[in-house]
Image (cartoon, rainbow, N blue to C red; front, side):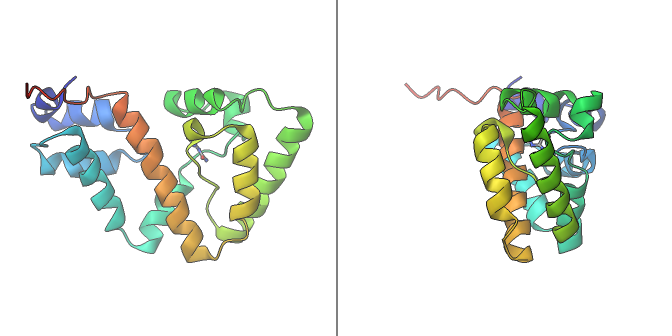
Length: 174
Ligand SMILES: NC(=O)NC1=NC(=O)NC1=O
């Protein structure tokens, strides 16, 4: 689908197609529908990012709180969204050793107890080694810094999900 077709979608179809570009946050998609027509894929992405940036601290933390843990119970129980499962598998998180699974679980719990939201990282731009390293390093961040870092990861996940849904414009300038 190209951006021209996107602009003609009624809001039901727009939310149906783009409702999970921010994990489990179709409200964001439903809200930015009002900002059409989008001049480009980048314009649509900027509208989503602007909506996120305008949220209060608790609003941003709400986005983080609906993210599934990496290799948490959702991956084991198969209750992840399709996008999330594909991303976690692509980063090799379905091939962790027992020791790695328990280390991730321990660090995820420590992180959530400390910040009150789960550790979020763009799995497709990482692998299990860098994810584990980031989890350990970011645990030491000051809260405001870490919230901003996690929201940046949400935007990276959204960017890649959008890339998979909308054909970027080919420059038709000769
Ligand atoms: N807690 C997370 O980081 N979750 C995720 N990262 C991704 O890239 N996809 C997810 O579902």
